[in-house]
Image (cartoon, rainbow, N blue to C red; front, side, top):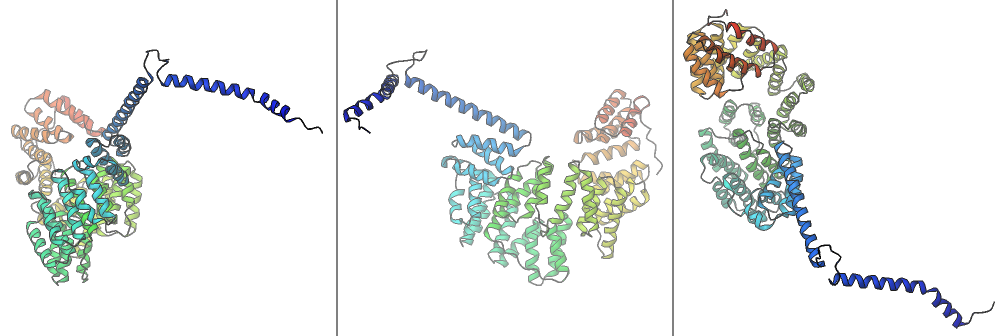
Length: 600
């Protein structure tokens, strides 16, 4: 093979690279044009704007689009809040808050919604991304950050986190309590107690709550004598909360004062009603056991300091606000099952029944609140329209030989499901067991009386009502029910009237009792006086068909026929039962039955 001369090879190479050279030339030309455009020498904008102007316009458009997107997400979040969907609201508020960390209102809304959705991690993320200046001005982000610091054991960080602008009375109490328990954890018990008490802000109601928490803190710090004095003061005022009553009874039992310990527990149950914590402790003491003193750690104390005010708020409000604080309390103490049980009630009441069911099902069977949760779960099924699930749970529960309190809850449920004979049997069983132990609960006799009457057994119902009144002569419910039953049957009219008057004195804002008094006067033929009370009852209970029906009857009897028909029409709109509707419709022409005593 003959080698090609070097010059020939070089020449061939230059020829082969010519197309590449042309491409390079075109690239240089393109870059040059781009450079001229960038320099503003050439403008292809139809409005004659420079490149810098177009870039600024693009940025402005991006800002407008971002603002529009934020506004869109904000509106979705607001709508989700209105339709009671906190999960969606939390997600949308979080998106907007992330792009606007300087917006105080958004930070509060976003954290509130996340906590209400039981998503503490999301609330913490939002709080962490919020600017320091806004944190100082807001409450819930500070509470979330402080609670998380405590949960992770970073107690020294809490005082600095909670300090900030005035947070109002309630959030101020929560923040002070978190600070107090962080100081307690650091060993400064004296300052911790002072800080805790200062959290009440001089409010008399909150002061009683804080005193309960102070007693728990004193026990936690082994200042038992001081705790006994604090608890004794609360006991004398009748303001012991469940956890404090439990703690007080344990201290008394440890000192050998079992009788006094049982008095504390029994008084609490009588005044407040069922509580699994209190009842379990009372049973242990009666069995001869000496219960140990429970000394809370800082996280548990802080959790209770959030939970207890929230529970007090729940007792005075039908809003879902307490759920926000239950979420915080559970971050501090995941084993605080009382918070789950009470939160489930709040969820159920606000229409979030599926969330309530899920929360109740998460309470373990080792918890003292498992029994309560089972009863709540059955009721939640019922309110969700899952009556068969509710009935199945009731039957399974009763077949398992449950404790007294759970039997009562299942009996109430059976009554609500119109399983009256079954409910009556369960109530009678519990009453028999109580009587064998020389215990008597007026509430059970009252409950059984209502069932007896529903089943057409008035003599037995009357006997139970009389027994309930004997055990609790100051119960407005018993006095009203017995008095109304007598008046409605045309027997013991004057005595029945007196009972209803006494019931109304004890509960003057009750529409049902006011209606009873008006109806008693109607049955006695005092129509003008009946109208006075029945009109008041209709104001207090505008959605109760029976009250509106009674008012229509009274109007008819004094010749106010048009008004009577109007009230009956209103009552019909509140009824579902065809028989009840037919009974009212039958009065449109001939009016109600005259006020003559009925046969008993």
